[in-house]
Structures are given as C-alpha cells and as structure tokens.
Amino acid sequence: MIKFEKVSKYEEQDIKLPKRATARSAGYDIYNNGSEIRVLPQSYSNAISTKLKVCMEDDMVLKIYLRSGHGFKFGVGLANTVGIIDADYYNNEKNEGEVFIKIYNPSPNYFIIPPGEAMAQGIFEKYYLVDGDEYGEGDVRDGGFGSTT
Image (cartoon, rainbow, N blue to C red; front, side, top):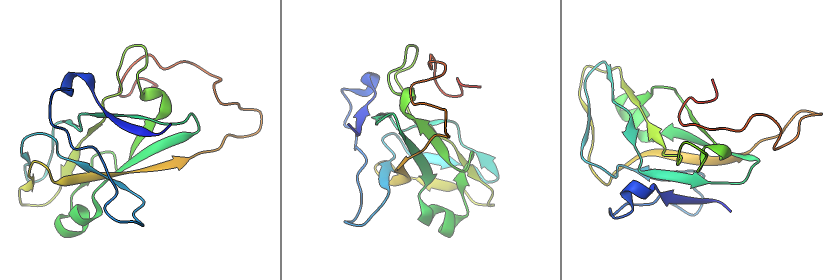
C-alpha cells in the first residue's frame, strides 16, 4: 500500500494531501500546509514540516525535490538537493515519520511560498538490492531524521 497521511499531531488541521497535477505527472505536489514561508537571501530556511508521513512498500523510496519551477525561476533548491524517505521511516519505534524539507536560497532576494502553494514534489521509485542482500535484513530503524548515521 502506498499512501500519504497526516501526522497525528496535525490530525485536526485542514491538510492538503499531495496529488499529481496532471495525468502524466510523475511527481506528487507537496503543499505548504502552514503559514507563509520566507527564506532570507543567501540563507537556509528552518526545517519546514510537510505535516505528512508516507506509507510505502519495502522496496520503495520517496524522493523529494523542490518544485522545479522554484529552482528555475528563483534559483532556490533543497538544502540536501534530494530528500530520501525510506519505507522504514514510517511509524518506526521512536518516530511517526514526519517529513520535513529545508530550502536554500542563494539569491539576493527573499523567497516566499504562500500557504497552500505547492513547494516540493515527491516521486516514488522502486529500488533493487545486490546479490546476497535481502529485503528486511539489517538493523531496524528506531528514530527519525538522520537516525541511520
């Protein structure tokens, strides 16, 4: 099963779930579900909560990119270039799996994302293992962002 869900602490809020903009879109638009986001010139934003978590199959990853139009028009990008959300990030022992993004603005101008506007996009991909490796083998994730380091 593949699905986006609200993080439980935002359950009572009106959250816009990701959706594809057109019939042939690969990416699911991820919206600014909070207040206006303002990124200072030549700065990084704070961690921005999408207020979402994502359930996916064990052999899948969700890759998150900043909305391509934002990069093209304004020169901004994700601080980590591409966000990688593993399947075991969802509802693990110590973390519900809340997805965050962080924006880098190298320009001399403020970068603003109004509430409700698409700010990122997520693309689901299947991945493969090398011979001798099996899905489900290895350590069990027991934390949140950066917990596998």
